[in-house]
Every structure is written in C-alpha cells, then in structure tokens.
Amino acid sequence: MKKIGHIYPWRENNQFELLIDAEVFYPRMLQAIEQARSAILLEMYLFESGHAANEFIEVLIDAARRGVKVQALLDDFGCRKLSAYDRHRLQDNGVELRFYNPVYIFRWFEFRWLENLARDHRKLLLIDGQEAFIGGAGITDEFLPQRHKERAWRETMVSAHGPVVKDWCHLFRQLWPDSEGKTTKPSSTGNMEGRLASSTGYFANDIRRSVVKHIRSAEQRVWFCTAYFVP
Image (tube, rainbow, N blue to C red; front, top):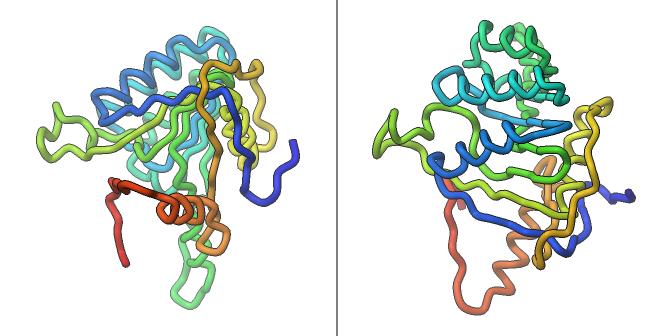
C-alpha cells in the first residue's frame, strides 16, 4: 500500500460508533479481546497497575493461551506505573511485550535527555484486523467512576469497522515491523467514510491540519471536548 508521509487515503464503507467514558468503552474493549480469534495488537501510552489493568491483563493472557497472537507495545514513560509483577505476568503467559523509547537516565552535562521527549501517545486496540478501538483513553483506574466517583477522568473512544482498520494495522507495524498474527481483510460493514490521521510533531501533524480544515468548513457549529487548550 502506497503511503506518503503519514497521510492515508479516505476509505469508504466503514462503520463508526462513539463510546463515551470508561463504563462504556472498557467493557466493549474487554469483550472484543475475549472474542478475538487470531491477532490482538495493543499500542498504549498510559498503562498503570490497578483494577482496570488487571482486567485487561487477564483477558490478554486468556487470549494468548487459546492461541491468539497478542502483541502489546507500551510507551516506556507512560507505563512507568505498571508493576514488574504485571509485566512478568504478561510476558510469562505468552503476551509479546515491547516498550517504546526506554527512558534514558542521563548525567547533567549530556544532551541525550532530549531523546526522552519522543513518546508514543497512541491509544490503539486492534482485533483480528477487523475492529479498531481508537481515542484518548489509556488503561488506568483514573477513568473508573466506581473508584473516583465524580473525579473520574472522562474520555471518548471510537469503535471502527471497515477498510480503514487496515490502515491502523499498517500504522502499528511501523513501530513493530516484525509484527505477526493472521488478520483477515476488513469487511465493508457500513456506509461511512473514514481516514486515518497521525502525527510525528508540529510540522508533520496531519491531525492538526485536518482539524483546522474541518473547522474552517463548518457552517453551523463546532464542538470541542479536549483536556488541553493552550492558545
């Protein structure tokens, strides 16, 4: 598949579903993992030991035990609160675990500390090449209302089916080139257009350009839901 930079083409015949807050998207993600047949690809920035992490670890291990190829790529800084015990649980039970850009402990006169700023902020779960969960949620108890009540973090995820899922698989394999696991061709299940937008910095930010373009073309309203707004 030809790709220029990080710009992917528009894909037709997709289906998208908005999943708002953890009490909605966590159960859907866990159920999808439980039903996976061939391959699970997980790319996550925030992964912290706790109740939520334990639920995901258990279903990932169960999937690996029944023969599903399970590969998890975690940001080394974002998962610093994932305990050694939980890491060993995954690795010892068939889950392939890798860490993006291990944090470098530098001395005061070294300039390599800049390398620590390169982080993987994606939150991505791919099931059998057929379904993608994408959005802003990591795996942490901070999102659980039963733990934090009104102080629980709010977040939004999207469930995607259709040809656009293939592009998400391609993006995952850019950071895990030898990723394996049999996936089938995504089925055309809907009537919605979709396009993957990704970024590697301010000057290569396809997401920013896409958002600005759609704001400028808006005719009635623009709704924002974001944790960060720094004009």
